[in-house]
Image 1: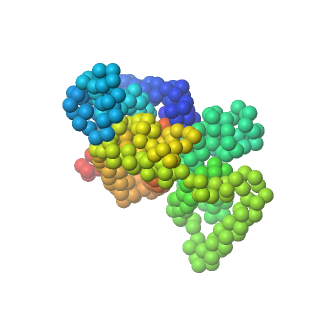
Image 2: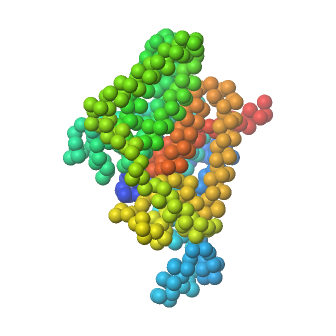
Image 3: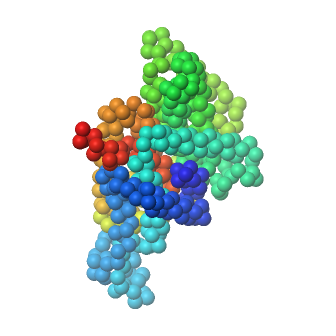
Length: 438
C-alpha cells in the first residue's frame, strides 16, 4: 500500500505540498499499523542492522542541522558572514542559531524522509513471496503511468491527465517531470521479464522460448517507447541497464549460438533504422531527437556555481533543503537566468552543498552498506535465484547514474522506490541469525 500510494501521490515534489503531506501522513499511519498490533510488535526486531544504520545515518543529517548552537560556534562556521551581518541589523546576531540557514526548509526535508525510510524498514522484513508483490505493484503502477501518459500526449494541454504544471508534449504520467518518469519506467522494466519468468516457474505459462521472449520483448519495447516519449536524454541513455538485467533474468531461455547472436545484432540494427525513419515522420519522436542538442545546456554553469557554494560553506553545509537560496546568494551575475535553479542537477554535488562533509560521509557509509548487502544477496542462491536481487541492483544502478546529472531521489516517489530496491537486497534479521546458527 505504501509503495503504490507513493508512486501515485509522491511525484509532485516541493511545488505540490498537498500530495506530499498526504503521503507523509499515510506513511505515518501505515508505520503505526505495522508496529502497534499485538501480533506485529516484533516486526522492528526483524529489520537488519545494515538497514537500521542507513535509517539512522539519513535521518541524522537534517536532525543535527536543526540543533541550535551558541552565537560563537555558528558565527565561526564558513560562509556565515552574510547571515551574521543581516541578523546584526535587527540585533539578533547574538542569538542561538542552527547549522541550517533556513530551519523550516530543513524540517520539511526531515519530514519528507518518513515515507522512504519506512519503506526501507518494512521491505527488509518481508518474505520472498511478499517481496515479489512489490515488483508487481511497481509494474502495475508503471503500466498505469504509461496509460496516463498516453492521454497526456493525445488529449492536449487542457486535459485533466496533466496532474501537475508540466504540460509540455512529453510523457510524465504520475510524476511532475520527465526525468522521474523515465527513471520509474526504467526501474520497472526488468519486472516484465521477472513476472514472465515467475509465470513459467509456476507452470502458468509453457516454457517455450519464443513465447517467453515474445511476451518479455513486447513488454520491454512498450516501456522503452515510453522512456523515449519522456524525452529524458539520460533516461534514454540508461536503457541498456534494464535490457541487460532482463536478459540476465531470461538467460535460461537465451540462445547463445553464434548465429543467434548475429541475428540479434542485425535485428537491433534494423530496429534502430526503423526508429530513425519513424522519428522523421512523428513529431513526438522528432522532439525527442531535438533534445540531444546540447548547445544551450545550462548544467555546467549550475555545477560551477554549486561547487563554489559547496566550497564556501564546507564542511558544515547550508542545511538540507537550502540549496536554492544558498545558490542565489552566490550566483555569478553573468550567468543569472530568468528562472530560479531549483536543483544542482547533480545530487552528489547538491548533497555536498546542503550537508557538507557529514553528508558525504553518510553517503559513503550508506553506499558501502548497500554494496555489501548486494554482494551477499548476489552470492546467496536462495535470494539471487528468485531474480529480485537483479531487479533491485538494476534499479539502484539507474538511480545512482542518473544522480550524476539530475536529482531522481529528490522525488518522494522515486525515493520510496529506491528504498524498496535497497530493502530487497537485505534479508530479515531472524533469517540471518538462523542461517548463522546453522
